[in-house]
Image (cartoon, rainbow, N blue to C red; front, side, top):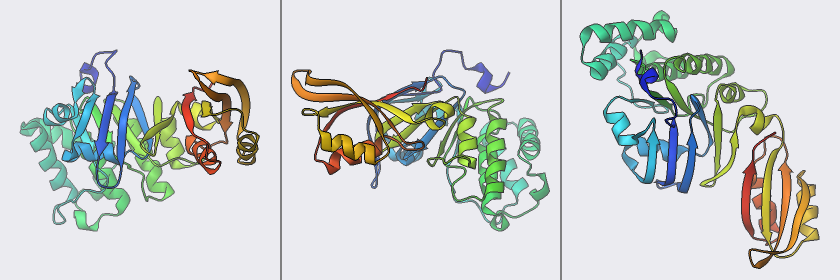
Amino acid sequence: MSDGDAIERGVATLELRAARFRESAESVEALTLRSEARVVGMIGEWGAFFRALTGAGVEGAARVCGFSLDEALAAGIAGFAPCDPDLPPSFTVTEYLEHAARLAHGSRSRAKTDFRRALDDFALAPIAATKLAELTLGERRMLVVATAALGAPAVCLLEAPLRGLDAAASDRLVRACRKIAERSRVIVSSEAPSTPSPARALLDACGESFWLERGKLSAHGTAAQLLARSSRYQVTFAGARSKPLEEALIAADCSLALRDDGIINGKPASRYTMAAPNDATATKILDVAASKSITVLELEPLRGE
């Protein structure tokens, strides 16, 4: 039984409760979500979450497979593949993997077993004798991902593995993510995908994905729910029904249906069910409302049917 198999069913792969992640350029405010999916996609602006894994800190609760981020990393419950870390240029692929395996497990025999498995699982054998300074970007990314998966930890956290790669290298990384998911749970981040694209293929491998924009959750669901149809929302605007706002939303290719117009929660407001265009998210609705100086009181993503 691998470490990943040892995690009980019903334990969330990723759970955030009023979590705040901060760094100089971005912040995530009071984010709450929970997913038991074996592969969880993190689409959009999740950089602050991954910075928290390298010591930037987090307020509130952030847990993977039932453990805090610090506990998971310190105990080897989580493997972490940051995007483009510094690697020792004079090491070969073999030397680097063997060294990482020994650090992870201590046991020389287990380290050798894990190292050999990584060479096979991630197609690294052809470059085993290559120095890290000579690797392509795609090969470096594959090595970092393979290192995070050594020993099949309960969960592997992969930061933007496809960023900047060509289609062929991206396809290889998507296959690697699927391979890891056979033995471990996976949390993987990606840019917003188009259709078709390697990022879309990565999203298809996820049981559930969360789309973050401007520090707020703008959509969540499966790949089909996020991309195969329009993104649907229930939106409440401050003030009475506004024809100029409706016309601006329609001009932005949003479809909408008025649900309520009058007093909502004691204040004048209008509530709609609406759909943004394919591959668009809540930002489009927020931008249109701001252009008409209208406040969005509530915006709730609706799961696809």
